[in-house]
Length: 119
Image (cartoon, rainbow, N blue to C red):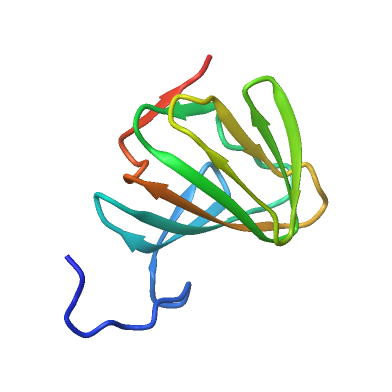
């Protein structure tokens, strides 16, 4: 539940976690109905291909360049570009570049616990 006194949230004070071997995530907003996470992927890292049963997601690149596999299509997202992923659509984000990619992922409802790995 939101606090009565809203506070400024940043990667400096948000809940941090590590995923994969070396990727970072910061929960900027974390509730059952809405999740907003800032993530950082070093060069050569990738998420596993998966889909969500209920969660709709929007990925927005802040810096760097990400490669997204969405179904059978491969697209590249540059800084200030984003893409919406509906529920049940298999997707995977990769960093095929030589630099970190930093991006935001907004999910509604939250995506944690709603993930199905695609073989």
